Image 1 (cartoon, one colour):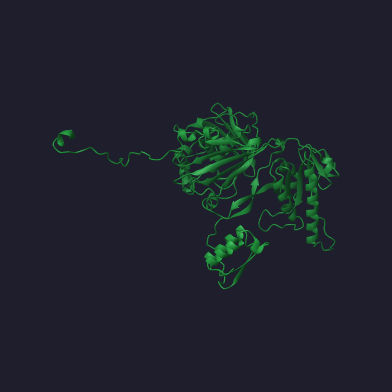
Image 2 (cartoon, rainbow, N blue to C red):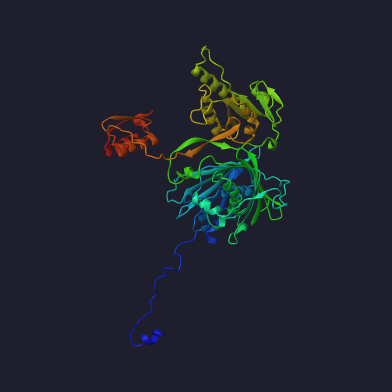
Length: 570
């Protein structure tokens, strides 16, 4: 319309109208823009990875830290992977993160990666991601830890660890070919309705993650073809997480869980594939070896061992978000195969172990710590029975074991070229109800403190009475884990895990308001926090705070006044 004619004789002016509701024009900065990724001016490097936007190498070659941010706004295709209705980063993506970060420091092989609690992405906002790589040790392994925390204004928001493991140099491609395809002797498996059945079970897969195209089975071995849709960009990753996740979908078809996995010996030989041929070779005990090849059968990647996680997805996701209590849990770990062990110079102190510890190049026994210079010294802390004829002198046995452990640690650390492996028997409980030798248990508390002060120098291994555990001792030593328990030949290591909420809330303990509550260490930070909690939550009116310095402790008088102001008599 010619508005000038309408208002020819009437004064009027054109006004700008508000933005049309469906005209998506953002009035805020896009954190994924090129400008936001330009970090060189901040002294940071840009790895060029969709998930990892910044990198910093620690001075002195002590490792590197890679950071990034995940959100459905920046990565909408992540919405296609939901477990129990929650957007969850596939474990394959965590492996790809470890490989990509390791590639930046020349250590892109994944010797071991254990996925624990899932990394969830919120419906709105985002989650910060951090990949920390440790310094290279004498054995060329580097530790890797993948953690996250939700976007918050609070800089003290806690980080949650989702995967831990070890990186190593990548290995040459195996002499395995998948050129003959479809696999000879394998029977095709019907896939009609496969992803719908997964959706019904709580595993929702969007178009990008529906990559399984064909499946065959030969005995316990599984073969598959997987492919990315055209809208997915495989060149942005070493191997696209959705494609690697699809390579595990045959396990889902076989009724196995892939949400939490232990990966051992993962190596990437070619980057950016859009389609893969998959061979999941059964190794028994729910373990599989994974080979990936391109359309011509040439190697792309392999994982020497995969083990599904022990917990169901719903159980793991029950405490995946929000604050939580933590407890110590023993998580299964995959030990190196005997044929993969690198010869290691081991020296056994005394005669407490068999002469042959496996394929480790064990050559000698030694009579003293000083004789083990340059070797890995293995010492067994067997606790002999006390003078009491009943063998119940637990206190004396604990004294003897800790004094002997202290002596070994002090002498072993004095040999700067050696690593000390202390072996106990039934000193820890990996399952509820497991018997513990109380005479040996204090050794773990003592040596754990020494491990914190001397990282990488001391290893703790606990055996049971099963001969298979002794047979796996060499592999436990070579695994790189600082604390390992062997039960019937199976290995586990202690990690922090969230305490899952009970089905019904436990009743709040009854505290008489007129009674007096004693808090030892009451003038410290934790004691003060607990005192405030007792007053405000339980209505406690009388507190007795004890500490080594009493009223002379820093802040003690101010704390007394604060608690009195809350209505308590201190």
